[in-house]
Length: 216
Figure (cartoon, rainbow, N blue to C red):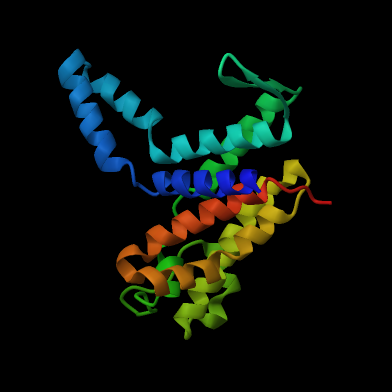
């Protein structure tokens, strides 16, 4: 029970970090570091890229998957939890790092906007995001909320499918398929201003918790 709570809270936080929550704070820290230590603009750009929210989220998720599925906990030694990593742990980390980055790529805005009710299909600005998904849900365009819910669920379901593949579990797929309804509920709670943020937290929690369970 504790592991589920830890996974959900950590996943919610890191997925919000991925969505830009840490942006203003990081900008202040980079400015301070450049001023305090005389770091050049090129170094600041490198640091900025490495500490991008998407990269931090992907790295944290990859490490979490390795701890859950490719390590053995040895207890607390010197006040620090110690894990022995299995063969293939680094490969699993790289794979999940890449899959989390892939899922964080552009292709969300219209689905979320339509599901939330503030985007509709117009000749000037048609609803469109990921081409192959858009073709699948084309018949729903006259009902934009359903179009957005379906698009989000397919988009996140595919994301979960790839995440769960090396873990031999279908739970991330199921977590992803819940994305559309989760977004609709989040917008009902937080309206347009905070609905996206709530959705990101809920989705992160669902994906992180889902990797705790095996396919059996």
